[in-house]
Image 1 (spheres, rainbow, N blue to C red):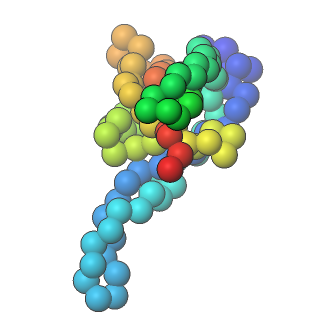
Image 2 (image 1 turned 90 degrees about the vertical axis):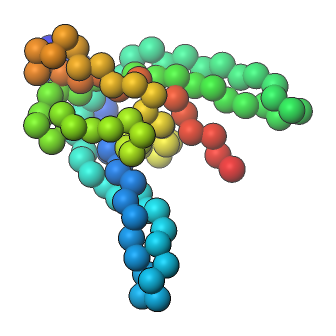
Length: 111
């Protein structure tokens, strides 16, 4: 892996359940890990759904392997890049060589 290609900073956030002062449970996103990554496959496409223009951007982030990232779950984590939120679709462990991880993501739809 060429380290010079790791030129963008991403933040991986994890969903956690917290309890407020009166006992209500709610989900919040907390910063879990921040690192440099390589961005690839950024493809933007728009389509019309129910009269709305929907942005379906897909993107992949490749990061160096570390023990903290080895147990990241795609259903409980998301990636922040360039002030945009990306949901993790799948995680490729790159033949389990423990050198890099590839996160395939899609841009989160804003409400």
